[in-house]
Length: 216
Image (cartoon, rainbow, N blue to C red; front, side, top):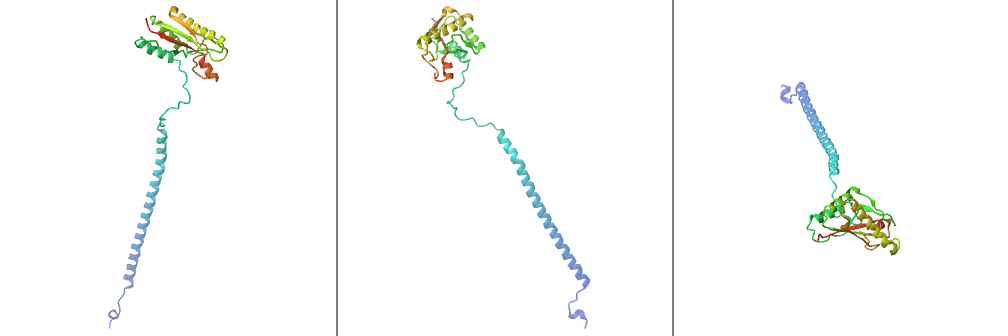
């Protein structure tokens, strides 16, 4: 009897080829899995790098935006005096009907040392414009009122305030304003606009103010 009929005949050569083919396929699947893992890691790394690169840009963009303005201003600190306030107030008055007397207008362009009636001009250009504007309306009269701080007695402050008002009258007449249209009034330490307990307050109280009288 042929041995091939009793047992399953296995050709050694063919059997080795089958084993090699199976091993070859397994290696290719393993390589494919490794490649997929490597690609997944690479994509994950790229995504993290992109997120990190965009973060500073967003931060810089936020910092470049202007800060939100406060809803309300802090009124605890008084605003600095604007030397153009007097000029602006006069312009508004003369631009109106002029049928009533103006409000009292402080001449912020001038200041006075303690016990002194000589004005110190802090904004000559603006003060010159005030004089020019007044001179262009000769049908109105002007009252110049002088003030002092609380330093000194009333016997000193009353005449000193009048001298300050007169000094401004002289200045206005030298700059084209008709002197006959100007009257002076000394108020002493009355009608303070600031606290006399501080040096800054006393400096603000040593002042002159003008009022435009309605045209007759």
